[in-house]
Image (cartoon, rainbow, N blue to C red; front, side, top):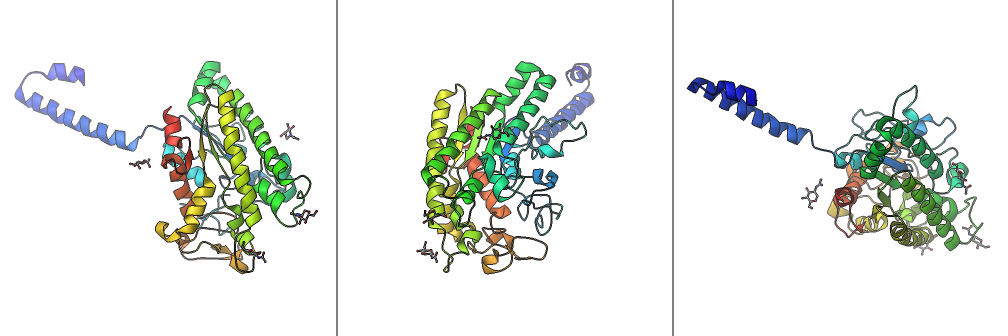
Length: 374
Ligand SMILES: *[C@@H]1O[C@H](CO)[C@@H](O)[C@H](O)[C@H]1NC(C)=O
Ligand SMILES: *[C@@H]1O[C@H](CO)[C@@H](O)[C@H](O)[C@H]1NC(C)=O
Ligand SMILES: *[C@@H]1O[C@H](CO)[C@@H](O)[C@H](O)[C@H]1NC(C)=O
Ligand SMILES: *[C@@H]1O[C@H](CO)[C@@H](O)[C@H](O)[C@H]1NC(C)=O
């Protein structure tokens, strides 16, 4: 434009033309700014369980923890099942969107020489737990958190090849590592008839969860992670599959108690890990508190059904999971639960907003937006 301006500095008509061009350039610049929002981080690496699985389990032939059939995905933009345990999108989609990034694709979808995108990869797997045994015992063939971290190590190696050691280090130090896991370990241990129950005392079990988690976070730190978002587990004793076991539809008090105990240990672990790991920062999300608040005043947020699953059959729609023969509710926006275990898209959206940009009521010591701004 500068070249045009100098050569056009002459007659009135050319000056007018120049002004017009400038005005157009100015406005197209504004449009570009608003359309191409700069992402809050170069990438999001996603780890966890079915709350954030975006299709890894579609590639596990033996897994029974799948959602690649109707009525899952009924509200997804394509209207088709994707492997997300949701009527539509899940927290992984909303978190990425808040950051201005595309949803990170499933690691297991990157076959046939497809390189991992520079904007991140998802290792999350339905049924996965912090402990190796969790997915194997309860749901068969989930990608344990340890295995997810091993998969990340190979993505790390590719990044080093592509960007060089210092380029990869820079990229990873600004990226978000989001980890949403823990519920399945607690379900495996504290529900009636669970195989691993009574093998160790409850406090020892939740301590084993946090110490195992700590080691895996330390491994990620060693591979370059500096910004970590971790969620506590929710009031999982209140999901339909638990409520239906109580005659009056009340929550499983013991499961909630140990969920809260686990969360207490997790918070202490994260603070200790930060002290031991120079340059590491984290955002912890109090899923339990956010859920308790939602159950207390659902109407404030537009929800009318907090107990019954939208999709399923039987008592609280929780005797049968969300499979093609199940029925599903017509209004998914007023239900907290999509199926016997998982929240609706509406709840995932609400909680992802709190995690990204919520007040310190539910984020500790900061939210993800603040974490990425460091
Ligand atoms: C868990 O599995 C990983 C491999 O994914 C292995 O390296 C690790 O030793 C296992 N941990 C335990 C406690 O068995
Ligand atoms: C664990 O064992 C005790 C008795 O040893 C029993 O009372 C309790 O119900 C068991 N808990 C579970 C979760 O099975
Ligand atoms: C149902 O839940 C209530 C409240 O937690 C509890 O007091 C009661 O014992 C439970 N009933 C059964 C049958 O589990
Ligand atoms: C973050 O929160 C602030 C204050 O509540 C609000 O003005 C802003 O629009 C929010 N931004 C996003 C991306 O949600």
